[in-house]
Image (cartoon, rainbow, N blue to C red):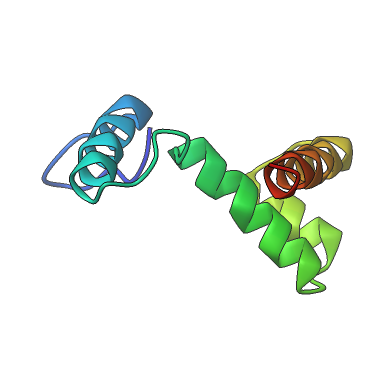
Length: 85
């Protein structure tokens, strides 16, 4: 759950995903662009910009640095696949 307030309960991840999906479709963006893909991109950009790996880990709420490193490796592999098309 995200951002509870005095006016409403916290919003669920699924609500964000559905809203993002509608916006993405109306903008004509590809279905591969998901909230999770944006999260991966965020991690990749922080690491490429030289941010401290611990800061990046804390930003995305990973308990283990190996999870953050795995995200970066996954993104690099995906980028290589996209470039080879």
